[in-house]
Image 1 (tube, rainbow, N blue to C red):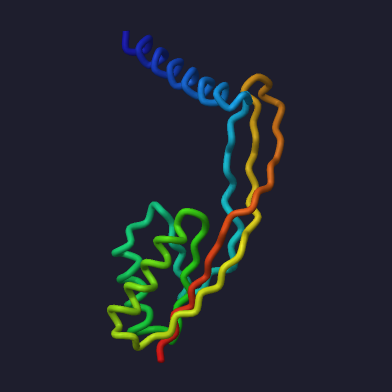
Image 2: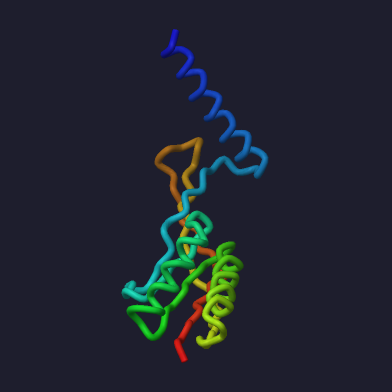
Length: 139
């Protein structure tokens, strides 16, 4: 009975995927690759939507207070707003004793398009994503 129920849930999940793809009028599953990034140094902080902003705040403050004269904050896409809020919060907390330089740009990322109808059929799609690099320098 348990196996049958598990199989039913798997089938339901697969049909949900098919419905989502059918709504787009494409029978493909999109798998996003990890975006390219520079070689990280000890003073680089990568902001994502999944990491907690308080932990990032404490890390940046620790790096500026004890280890480095500057910290670089990197973010892509939807995480840009969180990175900007983080930089402003650090500037406010350190009583304007740091300078904030913001560089914006775009990064090319790659998506794999896997056909749900033919398992061997796979295409690659390139797209542009907004990026920001914030340099916090101690004065």
